[in-house]
Amino acid sequence: MAKVKSTYICQNCGANSAKWIGKCPSCNEWNTYVEEVIEKTDPAKTSWRDDAAPTTRQKPVNVKEIEKGSERRLVTKDIELNRVLGGGIVAGSLVLIGGEPGIGKSTLMLQVALSASNTKVLYVSGEESQQQIKMRAERIGVGTDNCFILSETSTQNIFSQVKEMSPQVLVIDSIQTLHTNRIESAAGSVSQVRECTGELMKFAKETNTPVFLVGHITKDGSIAGPKILEHMVDTVLQFEGDRHLTYRILRTIKNRFGSTSELGIYEMQETGLRQVSNPSEILISQRAEDLPGVAIGATIEGNRPLMIEIQSLVSTAAYGTPQRSATGFDAKRLNMLLAVLEKRGGLRFNAQDVFLNVAGGIRIEEPALDLAVCASLVSSYHDIPISEKVAFAAEVGLGGEIRAVNRIESRISEAEKLGFEIIYISRYNTKGLDLKNTKITIKPFGKLKDVFEDLMG
Image 1: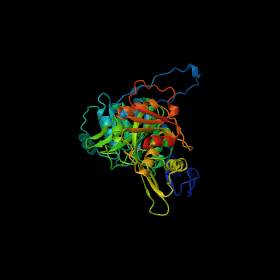
Image 2 (image 1 turned 135 degrees about the vertical axis):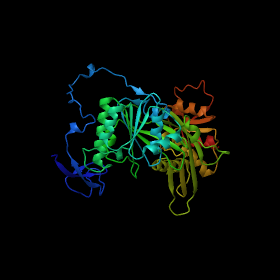
Image 3 (image 1 turned 90 degrees about the vertical axis):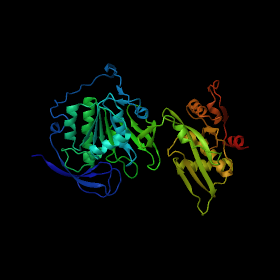
Image 4 (image 1 turned 120 degrees about the horizontal axis):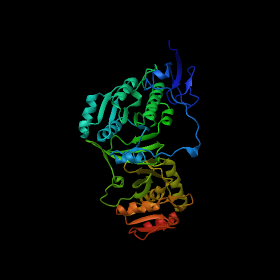
């Protein structure tokens, strides 16, 4: 008879304890330990392949003798997904997609499965019935003969169906709904999530089949389950956006096969998610006239240049303590830039309420937007609008100096393509800059004060 034992597991980080404790010594969270009954069975009988042969022992090989193999990638019809994955789906990879409820994770995965015309895809749903998925598929309006739907939560039953049909891509929606007979705890617990992910990872690596896992997130925005879940998978994608807005952002958090600074942008419509090929046009609002407090900055996300609209509002503080609010921008960096403007520019923000917003619902942390933020604040402070044909691309130092940023050619090219006529950059970026075929006017400066004198007179 199998030995049954009980242990206490932290639901936040997955740490184990022989008895209940109030504060987790690993993640310092309170009241996260829950008792779970774990049944230890024979691992060979619970593998995804019950008839699997004993694992062969690997021998150490000199690094010079290892043959270099090329990564086989499956290129989907979703260009944005291909970008964030580093050029396509890598064979045998385990991809985790997290996001808030109702943000569109299931729609994205079903859309990818339906658009794979030459690839057999098994879409496993533990949250919806086959009829519900059929209704969503009809709404998306993409038809294929290679997409199969399975409503199941047991990993043993899922693997039995996998052995019968041998899919080329496996989608699990969601990992928190799966359970395995190897663990006696409830579905969604730390033990079940960790064990099910381990079985799926073993299946992906042994069969060279890519597996997509849809995961829930907690209130603080992190993926639910133990932190080890993110360490086990090859790629972690975060699906972000406001459910009340139409645009969604697919951001790479971890990627063993590509860059971690890529993002894809979608627009949620009645017929599903539409890929946005030129996000700069949607991130810049269409203004009928020039408004004070609005400036356009050039940023880089991965390999993609973006033009971002910075909106600010500076008004007299109605109460004793002035407010500082930033949406889509680092609040601490905003306070630093306000201190620089006060010290180097002579502006009195200590008696002003300051509100800053990055248009489009996107969050940017690159320092290349510093000059655009400062220009937006000064414009709102003096109530002088900045021309919509002007863009900014530079970092601001504590001494009020304009610092250089990387890949300035891509930023200038993106601004010129979108019809901007003037772009302010650092004078230290002009070294080696080829301006022969550039029609946009480039204004390099070294001091923040000189920029505002040229901009506003």
